[in-house]
Image (cartoon, rainbow, N blue to C red):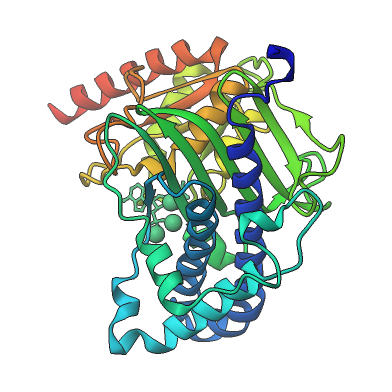
Length: 362
Ligand SMILES: Nc1ncnc2c1ncn2[C@@H]1O[C@H](COP(=O)(O)O)[C@@H](O)[C@H]1OP(=O)(O)O
Ligand SMILES: [Mg+2]
Ligand SMILES: [Mg+2]
Ligand SMILES: [Mg+2]
């Protein structure tokens, strides 16, 4: 009977949440063990590498066990860990990944997912798991895309970062899960409790869950992007000037009559903030260096925004194309917002762009 069928992607959703939660426990522990003690004094980037690789090892190991046929487009690969000079890093990564995989089962997790004290992996198994992220993507079939630490710079500063995982089927995002260990549970209480998971499944809505116990009954909050006026509208944008053209955002804001200051944060936490109404527009315009946006930097965020009732497009209003491979190709920026403001933002971008071009001709 149809009523007894599980919702589409129910198993994928549960497993993706468990994988992202475990990866967040790992990255938070890397921050406490390594970043606080080492980076702040030595400006050593190795904690990032340790965190990125080991989080990818954990998530890919879990996905591989549950969905052995599914390819993965992951940001990292293990080539640097397989050579002699990578041994110290490799040993640390293997230890951290195993520590995370063998941690006691939480309510909602199942031993058959290959988790818990009996499920340590060998170094080779974990390196192979990292390399399962080497898939090139493409137009057809089912595939996952993973950014084990999105917002590396934010991670190192102790600010926002996210573990981002999405499932694509024939180049359409069907499921997105993002773990944000440092994001306040409520933007209204910025110094209150932190740590959220965001989940969206095509046609099933967007939700926020507690990171420390995502499967607990009744803990999920449905997210809907609210309506904004020019007085309440604000932009969500990068901290890093090299990632998005913030001066252009400022001009677009002026055209729209925005008076509130932008909220700057690293990572796809911007999409999460948009989905729950902490900000009105995520605007990311290219800086002009030819950088190609990666699919793992937008896939989970894209479905979260859509399921919260919003629209995501490039800077011309065209849909993002997740079927081109590992990147979004020559796409022109990213614009995400509620439905009511989206067309206005696209028009404002057009105007600001025309002004910019007229200026350059002087
Ligand atoms: N030149 C660039 N333009 C746009 N995005 C970039 C650029 N360089 C790196 N990124 C990516 O931007 C994302 C985070 O941006 P932000 O936090 O500003 O939204 C990261 O995934 C980061 O990649 P990486 O993960 O390799 O550092
Ligand atoms: Mg990223
Ligand atoms: Mg990353
Ligand atoms: Mg990176």
